[in-house]
Image (cartoon, rainbow, N blue to C red):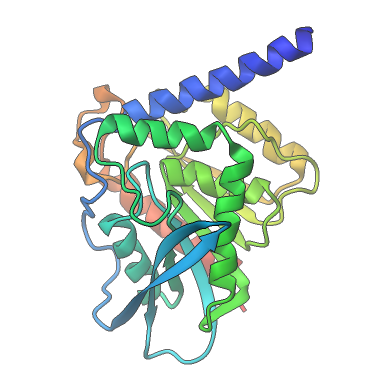
Length: 281
């Protein structure tokens, strides 16, 4: 009985943490793409429909048509507002680096929460069913693997906030991805990785002062990744809180979510270095 009580308590605690994370986004807009990180003047793009069971999802894909043959792909998992301009720009910027940028649609075609309440509910629904979330993410990965331009043996994933949590969940699932990068994502899960589960290299980019992804979550993921035998890194950016890559979050750290230009630039460069190694031939 005590074990059941503890298990329920753990799940409730994670749901509460997820709720707190979504509250940090009040007033921000996922569509504010911020400064261009990589120039992408010659990038070709398309919209691709793929299925998760009976649910239709719609990805945005970008690539440099000047390059020939198959190349690595990087999935981009959106924040709590769903796929939009922010993720499409990241896909184009990844394409400019020589990858296929594949902007994932977790919520499904046409599902784009417009209010804080709708976005919170969407996020909590997925966090409450991690198995279904893993299945939805695997559907996107499968679609990327089947794309004619993608080297299916070299696929990675990045995600922001909700998306950061998603890519860690993808890694925990044992999916055939080369590497994952979480930008200010939640670190907790109800389905912790066991020894040997994680095949992907893992890079966690974290705001050191994030009030809702605190030392307890950092300590827990540290222990989890170590016990799982994962190849992992965690970089904590000083003076950075939640949403540090999102200019629409403002500049007031006291609100718990704020843009930090230095952390934004440094984390993007850290991602590039990580992929240069992880996705090398």
